[in-house]
Image 1 (cartoon, rainbow, N blue to C red):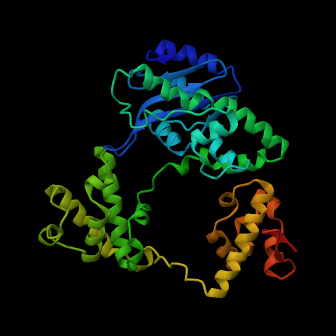
Image 2: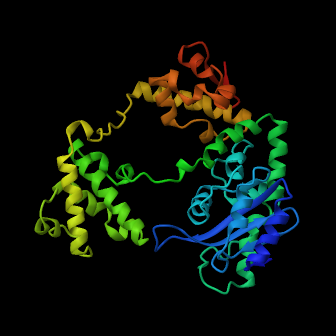
Image 3: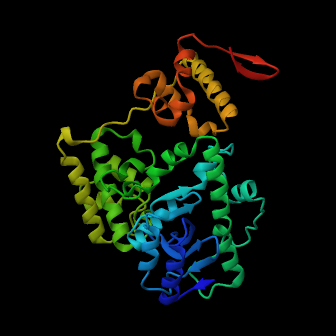
Length: 377
């Protein structure tokens, strides 16, 4: 069903609100804009699947109300980008939510299982991917495009119920929800302009003073990109931004001598120079700290981490929880340095691992190989 009128949207949302769960997916474009442009919202209940046209419908309030209805679980697959575009367009963040990609990692699947892989694993269905490069902003959409879009939610409710049943059987539903719940936190999707400098490529090579300039320039770039709704790289690439940070020009001539600034207007150049000046004049005690990369581990320490990771792999094999969900090598290195504040001592991870890492590091437990498999001594 294709919904392009406010009346049809209101009627569908009223029907959907009577179910305990609905599946949700979005189609959007962001190649030429700062904010993703929502082009289609697919929603499925156990009875019907619909494609909602946010370009044709001006008042999307019934959909917003459904997405925040506390009695209705919203089921997504890999929800982060969907949540971002829905928050930007509707002003609400769906809640409560269930992410099937996260949940699958507790049921023997790899951490970033694709939607196709999930549907095949839990519904026994193989889906085509023939419309993956569709321009979803163009109208009218063809029947084939709409069918493709609806496939992204058509099987999610079935998969959701199967997964919840298995998670409950294994006593892991609370584990999965502990990992999913932070994805419904608004702060996860809101950008702090004073922190975006940390994402600039190779900014970690900067001194504290240069980081102060980078913070101001990146914040200016972010604001301009958002104001004109264009990608930040269209304002200024990371390479150009870093060159400006290193050179710290204080006049137009020096600024313009850097290749890649030609597209900036005179007013943009003046605004960017003011950002550079703010960074140069920032009091030393207000400058960002220098990023200290973790020192390369010694061969002995690397061997210890390898042994710990072997234990994690063993626990993963025994439990069916994806290795990458339990811990990364960085988590293990942090555990060696500061075990008391490691996330491996908290929540479901501690329930799963217990004190086995401590026992391994203290020599109270060992690993051996039997029949080509690692076992605990």
